[in-house]
Image 1 (tube, helix red, strand yellow):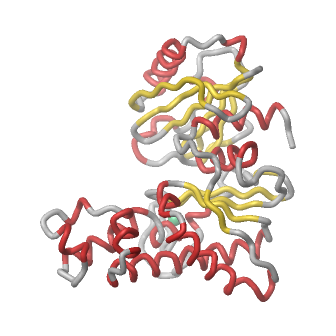
Image 2 (image 1 turned 90 degrees about the horizontal axis):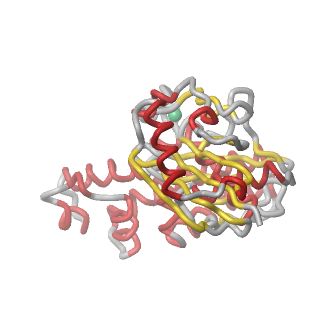
Length: 315
Ligand SMILES: [Zn+2]
């Protein structure tokens, strides 16, 4: 039975693992993210050695990376933060093995995992949003991942939801990820604590407001804290508005939520689904399910392997 190597390039860590046809990680390794392409090549070589891979059993290598990745060539067109040294590089050149190498944006890689083993399996039209420090996204339309002309398609975090909202890293104002993301939610919580609002968050983090997390806000909201509930509901409101717009554009069978915020589970999913339904029911005329991702692995390793298997066996 063939296996694939999944590799995730994150801002601080590279994670890699051998994944079998059932989507199970058989062996994995990780290391700090190097800052130059040469150091990167050496780090991948080291990972391959540590994994003691029998290359003859590998169907290929699948890479997920932040930013704008050109799927056809594996070229990194844009990448934020200190991964910038990878811009212009072909990711396949950074993997010193004579095997097919596939690469895509990390959210599209997560969607690839859902298409092969998860909630998008057997579906022709699906949307995924990865809710973390930012918001990533992927769209499958008529059985195909949308990539656009330059690999930008699917960057759902940069939908404008407030025309004069906060400045976004992309240069626009009021993008979804400036209003719904772990960073956006913790900034709101910080304001509550800093200004001394009556809240369990203020009581708990008065001496260290910078250490409040998105999870703290969701937990405080779930236990009835009114300030935390306001922050959560306002964030969900923006996310629901964006998803409703997407339903009208893509008319999908399902909306999948991934990323660390999705771990909030039902306290996020249920109110979001309800608002998406009432906002979209007139034209869409059915309750499109909003679900949490099914692939348990959030490292990007399994998704990377899915790129390999789905390229080998197209739907
Ligand atoms: Zn933006």
